[in-house]
Image 1 (spheres, helix red, strand yellow):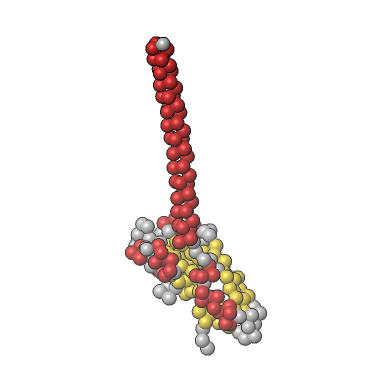
Image 2 (cartoon, one colour):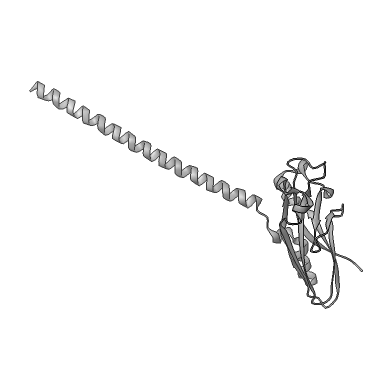
Length: 201
């Protein structure tokens, strides 16, 4: 009888060890699964928060134009501009670079005159925290529909616009960083957008 009890205990102990190993493996698998799910949740949350912080809202950035549309019946649309090291190029390349399209229409009963300017976007600059790495206006070149290469002045004027009642103008602008300007530092960039400024008569 004693022998049978001893073998019975060994059998129970053996099964107990197998069962414990099985439980531990199941726990490890569950732990890995939950860890993976948590990591994915945090990654998705990080991407969403990062996108929300850095995305550029054209309507928000073009407040001046939006106000003009409401107050003066002059409608327009545009895009935000980001210039980085990837936009440092020669004039030949700049003339075939990305085109920013600006459409302006005069819905008033009078003739209107505006200046189209490229301005730095202070809101985005504060988010980007790149105050020490901003490009100067004279380091930026641009070209309009006619294909002539120009350098931005300090007032960052792009074009004078004069529209009669009902007239519209579609402006194509290419903007790039002057590769021949020796003062362009690596990592410098520009955040901006176009605005319309009314010319008072």
